[in-house]
Length: 619
Image (cartoon, rainbow, N blue to C red; front, top):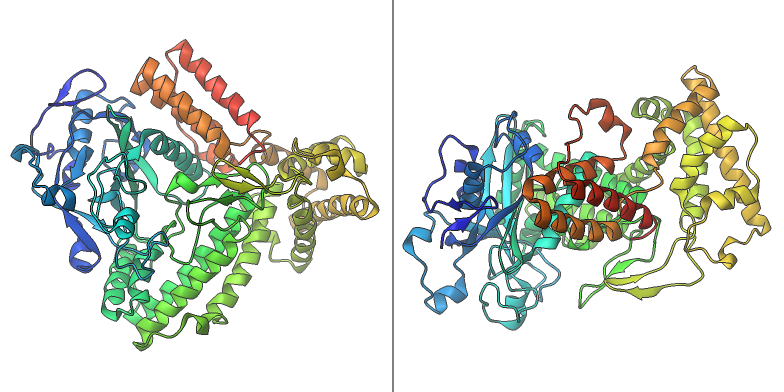
């Protein structure tokens, strides 16, 4: 059966990819195999027929150098053929070999593709002997003019590294519907929601892997293709650390450092030991920054000591458990069958423990002796993590208020500003973390409680109100701005200490405006006008949440069904741009909104924006 594309044509069954395209490089080969020979399982693969290109990320492909900069955002037949030939594949796994399953010779690719090994808490063994890519393989790498990129695919078959194999003690056929967490397939909806969410995050300054393409199959499954400049996770390194394997740890760390240097992200230091010390400094700052950013932006990312659900550069992966909250729902925890996740507050502690583990790993590399993890609780890197986290949190709140990066970097150096913002953040945190009297309750994917106050509404409204009237708002007016739909009457009581706190947060805000005006030699009114303009976007009334993404994904699939892949792409890009809340993005934006050709598409886009508004306080 020949491969199909959306336009009705049939993709050829030729073995190679046209050599005038960058896709010819993506063929299973990867330098990781030579550098870390014990870090993966190599699988033969065969063509999986019946697929169609459901989504292709033209922006990312241009950034990587896979397609020309002037390529129109359309999936022509040649591009569909190349995408299917490159990514519509499935591994020949241990079950297939044991049952002597046969595949047409012309469908078997010449190169093997690796499933990498890393730590995973889902596995009975906590040293990474059985865990890793359970339903993914690395397609290879692409060397563009500006950087080297890793490419992997999720949904390419059941590997021996899935939790099901470790728990049940047997191999499974790819696509077996009876197997939980081990059938090797990926869902179309999950892939598309990850594509949407990751693009919004990327253009909003949150590090993440990105979806390059999605291949859909008649059974509803999909192959979801992801790309990043380095797809290694801390869990890849920690596997060797937990096993006490010095040579394995050294080989993977040396490989990682070499890739970072080649991509121009690290300096080439004088000696391996200096590179190892630099690794610890980078990871300390990376995880302190991301923990502060996640907490400030209400991003829930399930981090744990294994370093599995995050990339080495702090990039988000595995969007199945990613949430962006509209409010600070501090008690939300994700239920993964046999265990509960940390909370949004607990992410900091998990990030710090990951840094502590890096300190243990670097010490192992420097001394040749593996010490107990407890010896690194008071390591200097842990103390530096706390300092960096606090500084990042304070700069984050300055940005959320509406100050630009130049103002933040300039003013944050002054002690009076730092004292003021420290006091402001303390009061801000009080309101942010007040939870509804309804308490903790169960939801579809875990447990949560509801936040009472919406601080984004406050930050958006204050400069507007002060420009209209210079007086402080009364307590009732403040509550009217702050309250969310979750708040019960009992949650909004104005007892004496809360009245004082409502006045205190305003005084600190006005004091901060005055100090910034002084240090930048401008007027308070000019500062407020700048804050009003920037905060209107940063703290916009509606911001996409995890709840909204679920509905948006369903609507996108509907658009694809009625209007085709190209029109869905145009709707998707317009929706993503509507959800980018960084004012800086629009100063450098060159591309105009993509025109929608179908009236139904315009209606769908409006519907999606309405969903975002309705879900603005959710999880």
